[in-house]
Image (cartoon, rainbow, N blue to C red):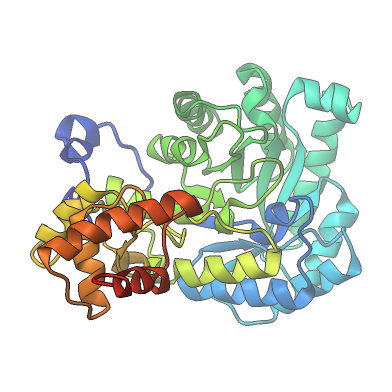
Length: 403
């Protein structure tokens, strides 16, 4: 893979040897989807048992490697949903979220999951001021719970909340003590408040890999709008699994969104996770419907208005190259993610190329003079309406010509 493929055309500098030589991606980058747990923690979202099972099946169908199916201790309904997901014969590994409490571990086992994400605050301030726990109490609880999970045959991913804001020595010393006294298969670098810069995350991943000698996963939030960049930086430094949610739903500003992360990894870095990008749009729309949380029409990858133009100059360039090399005007083809073909909008910023293309689409024949008149009519109508025009409105304006 390179900067120019059949379905994308990105900056050649991305693939300069001086840049790629600095990559330390794991041999296989995996994705853990936490839509059913952290995604549902967004205020106002409630997934029914039916919703959770349906979403889990779709995640599995597109090739997600790990599904965090929820928190069984939240309710009996959640536990039942997790159990049904585990009984559905999915290829993905099924995890659930637990506190470092042995009873939570035992409940997870009853649900049938293959692994647990075991949480305890990972920063001094969240532990001492938020939970009012001493570090000794946290380490003891984590060692007992993770050991119990291992003895019951489940994988353990340790999840130190707010680890990004902990002093590095505290984080590494605490994790080392839990790894030595309990059982840890992987550790998540948890950026609970989206407080990492990409460089800070990469630095911390390298330190964790060196000290802990175990797989590192990365879990970011979108508070500063950097979750995708920070997640990629962590992966580029050697983290082997990224935590995401569909449409980026989650607490506050949300989690790392699945869709731009996957497409960025594929096109900008040449990393193929094995996940079917062509099914991201249908998954996004289903989760949008089930969550009740609307997706912005200009949201990267899945927004319904991201392929198309209203401004005259880009439309004119598109008109010239669309049949020979559409990537001249696009970073990636709409077919990569099964979006609709580029749509030509007509509005205040439109030019003659917009009018010509839309008229041809609608089977309307316009003279050069008619085209000039339509440009002005469209602009005037759009300014009055404060939006672009529908095809029906365009037709109505065209019918006024010559009258």
